[in-house]
Image 1: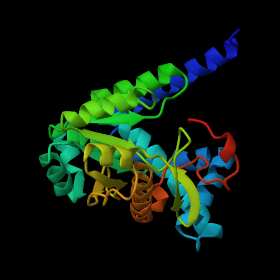
Image 2: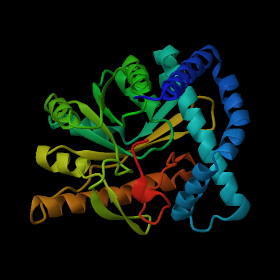
Image 3: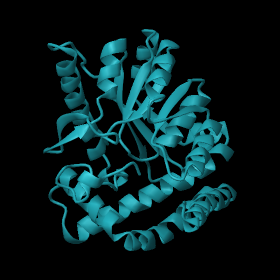
Length: 307
């Protein structure tokens, strides 16, 4: 029998996001960004284990971080994550003109070149900066996008977030059995598929060296790119210092080639992606929203779950 307290907790979780969304939508950008700066330190302090995990990851990116500089960088990660949510809540109410004015991009021609080939495009992203803003900008330009996202508990919370992204013009598909058919269908229609690629959420991924340490990353981007002859483009989206400011970097397509069998080819492609993700993350490691164990040496790695 379900615990009634669990239902109450779930309802409070969904309710808090709805209230937060409403407040964010009614708050001007400068005020919302200022509020984030005030609230984030208290949240970081209360989530000690998450803060320690962020610090482990930051030291992987920059081993010279320690003491106050490490603490400051980890706090910036929480600031960035709260900004991500606040802006995501506000996005559906913002005008197309405002979104475009606050967005710049380097390398967009790589996406255009990929779509000209007719087999779609796969954007492989780390959990970095404000990728929702880039999705809204792409949708405003008329690009159809399928976004594969992690399931959330309770299901009502996932559906709430799915609706938020659908309101931004994205086709939202939960990670699971239905993801692969949805991806293949989108690529056949010469559309864009977005895959967050710096966490092996389902397990059983490809072993790679990632920031100097062995772990696994999902094989999906490389496998889909090889099988479908689809360009896989590493992409990072960053917050800028200006209110609502965002800048995207689109890297050239991965050099996906047949090396022996499919397994070897996917392994080589995934390692190439790992190197590209390293470069994107190093541009702004304090905007890397990775609060979960991601390497076998991380505490809790063997018990990690979708979260």
